[in-house]
Amino acid sequence: QVQLVESGGGLVQPGGSLRLSCAASESIFSISIMGWYRQAPGKQRELVAAITNGGSTNYAESVKGRFTISRDNAKNTVYLQMDSLLPEDTAVYYCNAARLRPGVRIDYWGQGTHVTVSS
Image 1 (tube, rainbow, N blue to C red):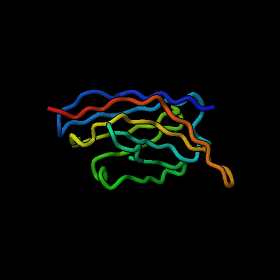
Image 2: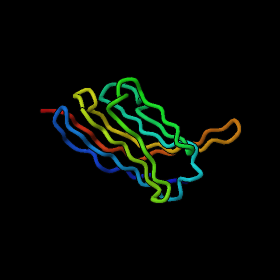
Image 3: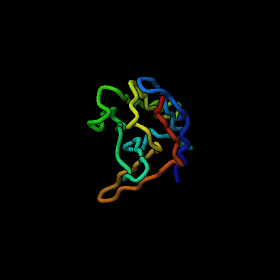
């Protein structure tokens, strides 16, 4: 059971930046995919960005060029650098760890951190 703890959320003005961190309770070296999802009020949870243990990344179209995901295996931590924030980025952001086995995906979730983009 991997426990994930997010931090770094808060209130920021449009155009500003935030860096989210996700600390895992154990080594993330063997975790296939680490990702960030978000859920805005009244909307479904959506993938924001993901990074494999090989370093490949994937981003939602809405955040490409503005957000950067990275992982530090030595610190068991994943980061989401968010720049040029927009009001529509307001959501609860969740860290996700996915272990992949043949035919099976096991997901672990953090408790979420709130991001509010408003003037």
